[in-house]
Image (cartoon, rainbow, N blue to C red; front, top):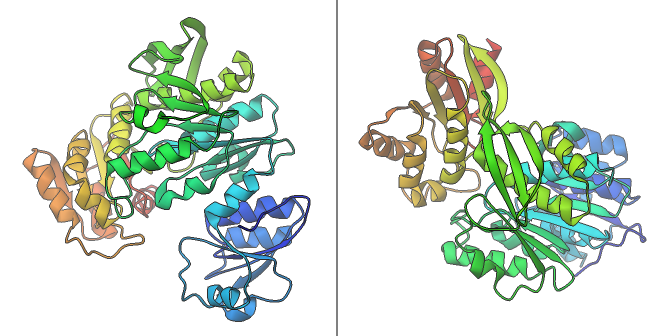
Length: 459
């Protein structure tokens, strides 16, 4: 495999450079002195930013964009073999790396590469950890799968040997990474368009857990049902955390304020480490905080810096993000698109001030909706009223014969007040007629459902 060496400033070309992750990696390399070119189907603030940093950007993809002097071509998952630049790179016998392979190669250039994995909570926990690292003055390089307001984006390029990255299991991409410290938050059934079943997912995480080796560290949630499967034969030092059982890091005296933000005492190997407060809601974020505390302690960060880092973290875009009000009702947007995530968000919302809880939900991908239909209905039942948009197809076609009306039927079977809205306009009209002073609306999903709340707030 082609190796990326920060001491050898090569020229890399990105096919699909405008994506949030691809653009971030391109920025890291630009700031390290590499020559960067790339293409995308349309201009965006991300491509404009890269151009300002010195990248050569092509709008539209064509064979002639692969020009002499390119050392390696990077391509995203959205790029298929019939792409003209992909074909031209192959014909030129240029080395080619996937986005995940590039991220793994970048990791090799840091003394302390850290990867945060798990079916749920990766973006939030990577961001929490990043706040702690910055508070401690470690000057980390950060790549996260969402917009983190404190770094004004999804990338921060530091000058130290510390690198932290969000690591996704989809298509086994995280198996291309080379972390010395790993965090595994949970293992759940998801991405069933790629994985056959939960057992195959657990095996993928097991392979990931083997990467750090004897001189590495694995921080893992002891509450994960597949803990023993994932950690079997792992040579790394294993540090555990838990909300439910004995572990190296646990939480006691958990209390929630009127916004659903938790305060708790962290217990480190049987002794009280200190008291911590969060600025994000929900019990699931106490679990994420324990993972972050465990990382901070592994890196020798003081309790005071860890505490300041946690309370200073107020969330990332699309994670319980306040958007405004309509008819006196508060509007919040959340990225939750899996039943476990929906349940966590709506459980957190129960502690948030409101009269009636409305959820505008956009299912994400046909395969996920089909495979987890009863679980989606059970989780959404925590809301008082559910409005369903059409399924967001993302990378898929509807080959499994599923629709949002199937989810509506499951909700109605459970006695949930629910409706199907064929368009965002109809959903917005229904919400205008129903929302009242003191109500809470959560727009929820990984597609473009955020537009519903933004349109209502804008009026």
